[in-house]
Image 1: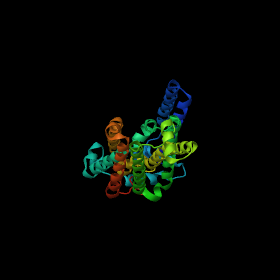
Image 2 (image 1 turned 90 degrees about the vertical axis):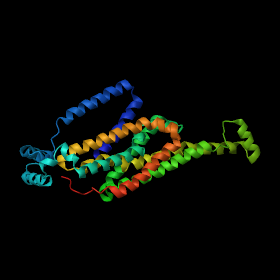
Image 3 (image 1 turned 60 degrees about the vertical axis):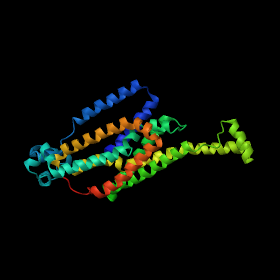
Image 4 (image 1 turned 120 degrees about the vertical axis):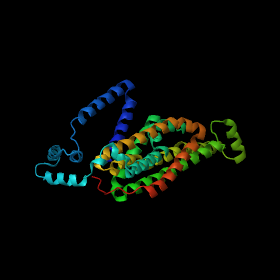
Length: 333
């Protein structure tokens, strides 16, 4: 259920970009505004969480919501008693003061590190700047089509992770995704570095080089042009493959799971406050990496930026392995 929202985010992204191909920004802004209005109206009809009502001592409200959710044939009083037992807490651990306790500060610190890995291994950069990255790779493909392709890969990565999440657990999914991300970015950075620094011996657009290759290799002109076209085709599609592998790696673990972990780490009495603090820290980091994107490309070069993402992903594997406890299947209230 927690992953359903991430799947729908990808569906919304595909819809948004697809409509943007057909419509101008003026019409797209109106459509998005209508969706926003519908969302606000829908949220106003949602029920409050029974667990939250039980923690706050609003038993009648919790029973009313449980009856609507479970039906008249279920003993909701028994479930309410279970919720009260699961979320039994003392007054001094509720509210923002509870976050100052050592165990909760440690959780916030842990999640800050995970969000750092999430942002600085290129997750948000790929989501927000996919078109720019594809442009800078020099792919002779339609930018809108390739951007949709990236989001489709993100969707299938999320869907794949949803099917294996309970079997493999949070830690294994995140570590596996970081391995895929690291391998993809190392390969992409190395390819860009070698292609930019190694002079091409064959350029079918220059007659002088064609003549030179013809005289040196004693080959026919047709063979030289065919060989040059084959080399160019590799440069065209291979970076896209590496980028798609990185997108799949992001979406099968480190991308969506950072948003799923905070609610599983805090009890109901502190879940809203603890999750909100973690989200604010993660959002500030996202803002930082997006603002540094152009600067990193200028100072580190494009290959160096991808190597940086890969290095953060490798460090993240050890961070998750040694510090993150598995939350899959545990009861958090």
